Length: 69
View 1 (cartoon, rainbow, N blue to C red):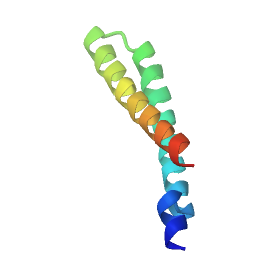
View 2 (view 1 turned 90 degrees about the vertical axis):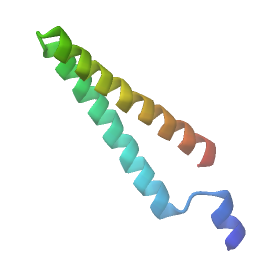
View 3 (view 1 turned 90 degrees about the horizontal axis):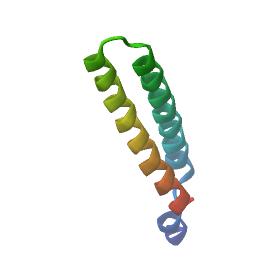
View 4 (view 1 turned 30 degrees about the vertical axis):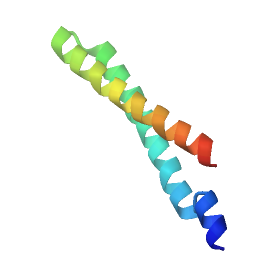
C-alpha cells in the first residue's frame, strides 16, 4: 500500500486539489470581468494583475494534476 500512496495522489488530496482548481478558475474569471467593468485605469490594472495571479495558480495546479493523476 505504501508504493501506491507515493506514486499517485490520495483520493482526498485529489478532491481538495480539484476544488482549489475550480476556485482559481472562478476567481480568475470574476477578476477579468471586474477589470472589464472598471473605468479607472489603475483599478483596472489591479484587477488584471489579480486575474493573472489566479490564472498562473490555475495553470500550476492543472499541470501538477495532469502529471500526477
